Amino acid sequence: MAFPAPAEPPSTSFPLPHPEAYPGEPREYARALMQRKDEIEAEMEALKEVLASHGTTPETSLFDPEGYPRADIDIYAIRHARSALARLHTDRNLVNERLAPALEAAFQREAGSAETSAIAPLSTSLNGAQPLANGHDAAARARGEEIAMEAVPDAPVAKVNSVAPGSPAADAGLNAGDYILDFAGVTAPGGLQDIGALVQRSEMTPLRLVVSRGSEAQRVVLTLTPRSGWGGRGLLGCHILPA
Image (cartoon, rainbow, N blue to C red):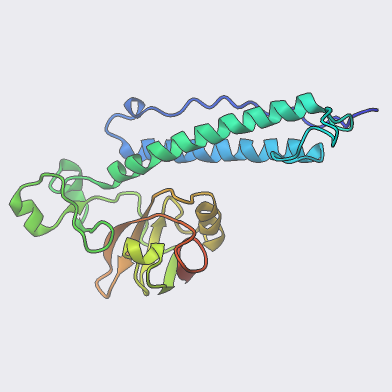
């Protein structure tokens, strides 16, 4: 029988960005990793479409009930797509492992550096009320850690309406009333759809958030890790609204 002629599986070669290629530019390195992650996930979706064009999924059996290779599908093309998909899963996991420390480095800048002289210092905390501790002197700790957030806009992308107790959002220190300025790279004019798509593909991946809090609009850096099985609905445990 004649098989359909679906598109060929796309290329799956994705060399990962190396930090040495971004000397002194931790934010650019983090953004390069996030871009590479998006590219990998786009290729994964394309491969899933190839499998769907054959009427299969990554889990579909390629053998008939008698144990013989099925004659109604192109087994070679399906195996090729599945192998490429497995490699991309590995690549994405590696990107996720590098992305968390890259985001941390991007947001941790010493107070008093030459770059902050023209930028208002911002008092920050990590994971809620826990201050950053990177071996600064006692005077610096007394002032609070100050970092420069050149790329963080003033306009919020979302507002936190409520936070469930014991949820990933609560563990991260997110509060009702916080305005989210940067949700792991999603900023205004992005919206809730962009945040939702990012969260769905980032389970168990630490995400950096920058929020504006209180009447003085204090900027706070948080680390939020989406996860299921925490005892409530969703991966975050918070309700956010358009800003």
